[in-house]
Image (cartoon, rainbow, N blue to C red; front, side, top):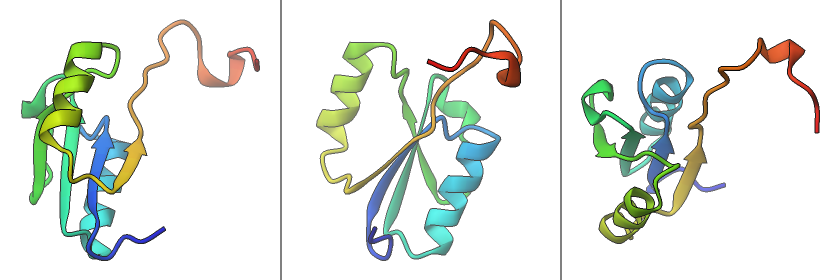
Length: 92
């Protein structure tokens, strides 16, 4: 995987693991990092470009694809677990 000079999109880039991944990509030499989140105001990492992106909304995914066509690296971090603790979740 080539990070140096890449243009990345990190989904779920709001505080937590996604924010750390976005920061790490910049530190490793990514040219540009877009941070996707349902509320772009929650993307607060310096140098990360906030993008409104709810991956469960096809219209938002299409819009992000059209306006961020230069993305060469995707970190698909978005997700939520609400029904049960992670370790108790069934394995498919």
